[in-house]
Image (cartoon, rainbow, N blue to C red):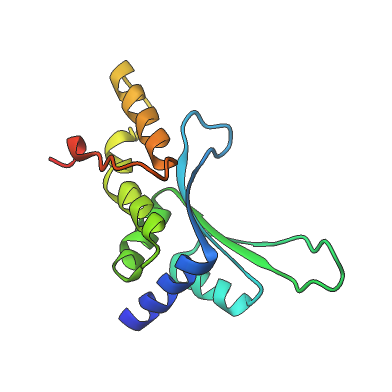
Amino acid sequence: MNEIYAYMAGILDGEGSVLLNKINKSRFRTPVVSISNNDKNIIKLFYNNYGGSIIKKKKYKEKHEQSYEWRVTYYKAINVLKDLLPYMIHKEKIHRANLIINVYPIVTKRNGKYTDKEILDKLEFEKEFFNPNSTNTFDKYMN
């Protein structure tokens, strides 16, 4: 399985995204891992291993090849990142994956009820996640 994870991590490094997105008008952002590619077999590899959804992308010109996007959210995204992180080499995606794996579950309440301080922590996490120059590793959560 290590060879498959290494292969998939390479695809994620080159063709994928590790993001926090707002979904369904939610108050806070949620983890999203996605891959876009013209090779449907690559997309199916991710789908068969992790579920999620496959989206057929719109072709803007007839001469363009059909492309697809695979996407997982929430805790499925965390599971993907846990499996692939040891094989990833893209520095920013590694940083984002570490934040999602280690900090997102801590700053996210399953019941959606947050104190004022928890809201500030959650918003700080989201802000730092998108700051490419951030050196904040959120050590205060890693006790």
